[in-house]
Image (cartoon, rainbow, N blue to C red; front, side, top):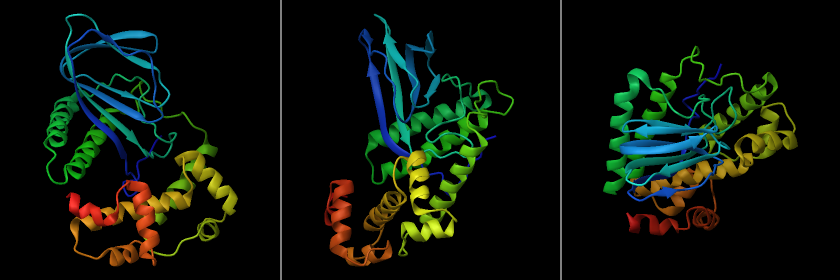
Length: 276
């Protein structure tokens, strides 16, 4: 059985694409190392996956887990308006990293279909508007959409893939969950890999190996991303100086903080407020 920890469930939005296709097109088989959700807002489109061709209509939705080859086909005379959402950093206990509990990409949302479709349109309008904080509003909408998908997947549903990892892997994911929870709640403190390892009764090398295997980055790299994410929000929503923000997220050297920030966001902290 899988389990969601709301305090560490923090998806990263890779892209939100509002896409019209009015031409005959075959994209070719491809797959991703993240989750992709595709929703038909209007029209008709064909998809191929699992050696099966499926025709989708307005309101249909697909969720492709990482590594699943698929292709999108637009025969002549067929038009579609679709919303594509790329998501990473999906951590669900009991499932591999970046994996949702649906074996069949074609979602059967049941009683949640109407609410999900309304959210899809709301997300499209939010991102197209480019209003202030549209990305933050969009993330909230996506969280609601993910919750609706999870509600539609009951344990008795044969499309669930709940027993996909071993108990040993579950233990490793629990270790990672505890690490992330601590980092999220203590990111402003001085934290080292050795300190985390001591707290979790594991060697630093083993913690780093397990954490990297599940999340794709080291615990310290993850900590840096958390700090910079909070710093970005403080830049947008407070009048604190860069030095004060650096200290609030755990950096005593504002120059080092600015260097990390610019490397991560390709934007100096001082330019965040100018741009917004």
